[in-house]
Image 1: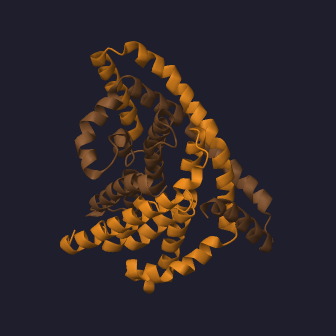
Image 2: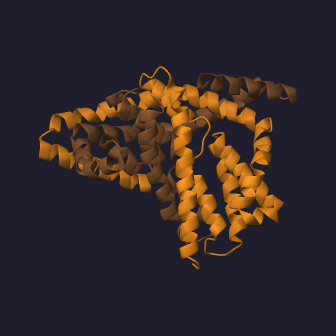
Image 3: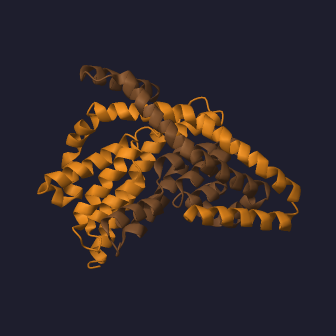
Length: 169
Length: 192
């Protein structure tokens, strides 16, 4: 079922655009060009962050962090190998991308840890960044309970990602 | 600025750990290896990113977002009561949620900011609706996580989309938990 969703969505979008007398092919090209421009801006960040993450891995610090965090992570049912990802995900999106990709390369994309990392990346957001952008733009000084509530959402996401990666795929 | 700190802290921890564990040569080798892994990741993301931003543009132009917004109306009125009286606000909030759902990050943020400004009405204290809007935006409910799928492919995965059900279930639970927490804390945390 899921296998047909993505190609189906692609065809659906194309047919809808044709029905609306739009030019879907040129829209795809236009959007694609924009996506590539975004990527070009992102390349230096990805290189820097993957350098840092690879350094962290080969220095032995990643294992050390996982060991230190292991009791807490075991308690919540989250694989301790994902500790770095859990710690960095709410703070920086590109750093999380770097950590997640390194996890998948080290442990294998189809391993339990690789799948858990993928689900975590796909179902959570850069909480601190989002909060500062929205409240900053709206001129809010007192954010009340927004941050704790958002962090509870993240925590639930990490726990559920560990569960669903094990039982739903 | 935040990335300067993250980068410096990561390099600092690596150096300290390498000295303590005697892994100097591995650490030195990691620098060119990591840089290369960075550009490999960027290149392997390029194809998917290009294609999906294109599809995003298609979905935007064909009015799928508008159709989804109408489906969302009943839920919207419950979560954000002031959208009942304010059709403009209802429009921006639902456009924000739908754009997030379809993975159109570029379209979602300006809409969300517009809605946040309208909800704040010049006050510096976040109201319950604004808190809920922000929590919903930090929870990421996304139909197709295309970037993650691209990373999985680059790490040698054969069926990158098999995470979809897991991602949906996880997102729904995390958004639900966030909204429930916001609702509870909103009761306890009455005034600013």
